[in-house]
Image 1 (cartoon, rainbow, N blue to C red):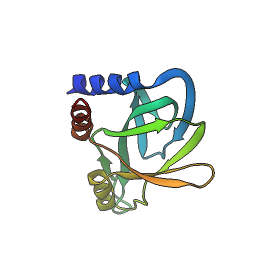
Image 2 (cartoon, rainbow, N blue to C red; image 1 turned 135 degrees about the horizontal axis):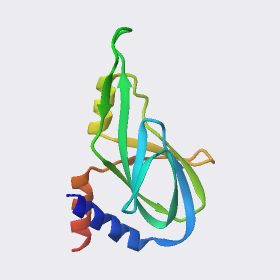
Image 3 (tube, rainbow, N blue to C red; image 1 turned 45 degrees about the vertical axis):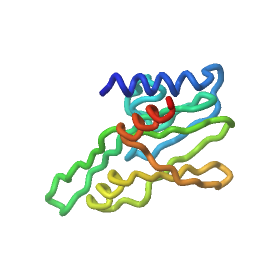
Image 4 (cartoon, rainbow, N blue to C red; image 1 turned 180 degrees about the vertical axis):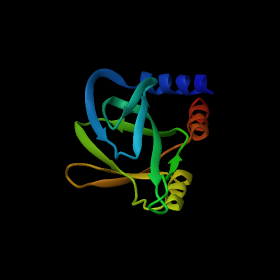
Length: 143
């Protein structure tokens, strides 16, 4: 499976021009970047994008306490993927919906939609993809 992800990332990376930085994205603490365009990155929350298409691998993680004596329940996602086309020098701020409970966290993992906000206040909702959805897009793009 990792081979397929690497192949997909390399294809998306080949579409991008690596000569200049086009944009950046900052993610909330609950979303860690674990890779970009096939390269592993260790738990960062802000990345520089290259001009063109970028494939970003993210993981959601947070802990929720039920009561004061509880050490908390960790909620973690499998890898989630964001495909973004960066053409301008825009500094995006990614935001998750408000997640206050463990149930809300699982709802987000099942339907991961984030909001990308530009410094001018423009916002667009973007659905994060699962591994299988990225593979499907890759296979359909070859046809």
